[in-house]
Amino acid sequence: MPRQTSPRVRLALAGALSGALATTGVLALVPLASAADQGSASAPTSSTGDRRAPTVEEGQVVTPGDFTGYGFDQCLAPTQKSMNTWWRTSPFSAVGIYISGKSRACRDQPNLTPTWVVKQATKGWRLLPITLGPQASCQPRFPRYDDDVTIDPRPGKNGQYVKALKMGRREAVSAVAAAKALKIAEGSTLWYDLEGFDHNNTACRESALSFLSGWTQKLHRLDYVSGVYSSVSSGIKALDDARVSRPDRFELPDAIWLARWDGVANTSSSYIREDGWRPGGRVKQYRGGHDETWGGVRINIDSNFLDLGKGSTARPAAEMCGGTRVNYTSYELLRPPRETSGGTKKSDPDKVAALQCLLKQRGYFDTDITGTYGGRVVTATKAWQRDHGFAEQDLWSRKHWMSLLASGSKVTTKYGSSGDAVRRLQRALNAASPKARVVVTGVYGPAVETAVKDWQERVGMSASGVVNAKTWKKLQAGARG
Image 1 (tube, rainbow, N blue to C red):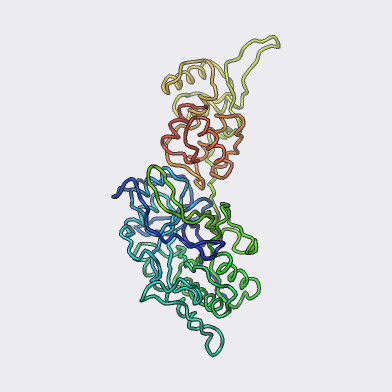
Image 2: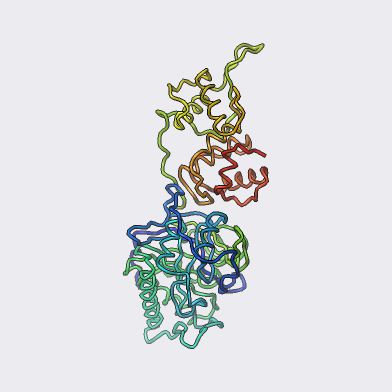
């Protein structure tokens, strides 16, 4: 069957399907283990910058958006209060949710409502809507109930496994209906969870591929994006082999979710080729079911790493003070000119100009940017020091730089975040330590994560890599450890 053109939108996703064979494991099929709090809370408006997160318009969510970072999946959608806590304290920005399929373990989802979906997307969570319906005919754990079925393995008269193909189409229709009922709109990626199976069983494999082809065909016709989760050594390998050796036989998904529990937070595996679904079409479940506690809330999860769409990117920063440079990989001590045995020693004029610009933006400096550390600069710096709890000095040290560079809203920022909040963080980290040397890009990536964790350890905080209100407060206080 010839491949059709996939939908125009390939959006980022996050965290939740599971695997199957010994190399991968099974998607989290246990309910929420425990939580410090239950109930619900209104979700504050997200402000993680220009993160290309899920869009929410008129109560309709298009998810997951372009993203590179961490996600988790769990059988039962957590309470709103738990989600709020994990947003503030955990490194995860994506969550998998089971929305349909008769073979899913958590058929009852008391927390999963249209309101819940909109609140998570508004906060910035990338949602991965999952369907776990008919499974491969040779998968020994299914059917799970009396009323679910497995994929029809009969090849039919023409050997094309048409019955399996039609089953996949029907499952896509059901998934779209469930998605729309939850306000998950067209353009979103819907994921099919195909648990691991015997890849060497021809009828089982070919019928599964036909089923997934039907799933993708129908999603495309209904203007949704197709994703498939499976064990990398069975379902994902079968898809990758078909991509290379039979590119016109099946309609392949737009994105794949590899279940490979190797503990490595990337999207690679030796079981499949590196070129498939690149760039921006992969998620990897790299750790199976385990308990994690963040902010006092414990959930049993699978861990995932996502690289979807364009990945996490940031729009260009707005020009500051007529083009004055403010991004540096180090912010050293500044002081007024002083006489030395070698003559008059002055502070770096470019760094002084950056200081003047930043103070001007905060309303502390109201004259021209000159690059000279003169009387008006001293007056402005002392005013800033006084207002922010520092002793008044002629000197402008690294802790003062940190306070000024980090000033602003205390929005939760973590791996995958982007925008001006990340730029403030990157500059403050460079002021905190001359060894940080983080390039100011506006994107929270691995180098930023390392620098944040190093700084958190130095100042006696838990090295989570998450920059929440408590972390921002220490940065704005100039804590260096």
